[in-house]
Length: 402
Image (tube, rainbow, N blue to C red):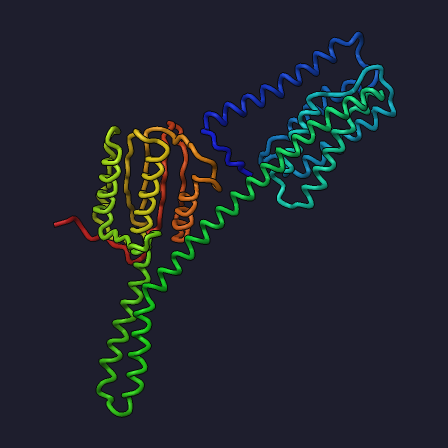
C-alpha cells in the first residue's frame, strides 16, 4: 500500500535513509552490549536476539517481489520471537537476552500490519500476536522488576504504534473513499450528458417511426421519406454520442466547446501564460503528424481536459516554472505531455484532501478510452503529466493544410 505521504521524492528518500540509519545504529548498540560482556554468553539464547532474530526481523520489514506477503512475514517473526522468549525461560543465562533491534522491528511490523493488511480479521489476530511477542520480551530477564518496568515502557510504546497504524489505516480508507467518489462522479457526469445529448434525437426517431407506421396503409408514398428521416436522425444521434465529451458541463452548467484541438489548446496555453505574468511563457509544441490528423471528439475532449488539469496544477503548486505542452501522434496513438520546470511542491493534503482528485478523474477518463495515464516527477526532477490514447478507426490523416 502506498501511504500517499505529502512529501517530494527527495524528502521520501531522506526519510528512508534516516530509517535505515536508525536501524543500523540500533544493531550497532546491540553488538556493543554483546561485546562488552565479560565473557561470551554460555547459551545460544544470549546471542541469538542480537545476531539472528534482530537482523531477520529487519529483513522482514521491506516488501519486495522476492519475499512473501506481509502477513506471513509478520507471523513468522512473531512466532520466532515468542519461541526465543520461551526458550530463555527454560535455559538460564546470567545476562539478559533482549535485543533492541528485534524490539524495534516488531514495533514497526505492528504499524505496517495495522496500516496495510486489508482483511480486518487478519489484521486483528496478526497484530495481537505481534503485540504478545513485544510484551513477552521483558520475561527474558527473568526478573520481576524488569518485567514490571519493561512491560510498562513497552505497553506505552505499543499503544503509540497501534495509534499510528490505525491512523494510517483510517487515512488510507478515507483516501480510497474519496477516489471512488471522484470516479463515480465522473461516470455520472458522462451518463448525464449522454442523456441530455441524445434524448431529443431519440424522441424524434420514435415520433417519426410511429408516424410512418400510421400512414403506411393510407399513404405508402410517405413512408420512404419518413425512413430517410429516421436514418438521418439515427446518424445524428450516433454522432451526438461520440461528441458527448465535447459539451461536458461544469458546475455552472455551461458547455465547453473545444472546436479545434490545436486552436483550443493554444488558447488554453495563452490564458495560462497571461495568468503567470512573472513566469516564462508556456509553450505549445505539436508534431506534423499531430497537426495534420483528425481525431474523434472524445479523444480531443480528453486531451483538452488533461492539459487543462495539468496547467491548473502547475498554477497551484509550481507557479513561476516553465511549462511545455507537447502533442504527438502516430498511426495508432495520440500522446500529450505537459512538463514543468521542477517537481511540483505539494502544499495540500494527499488524495482525499484538497489535492490529487483531479488527476484521479483524468485517469478514469483516459482509461475509459483504453488509454494510459501517468503523473509524477521524472529523473531530471521535472514534473510530467502524460496521457496516451489509442486512435479510433474513424480517425484519419487529412493531409497538410492548404
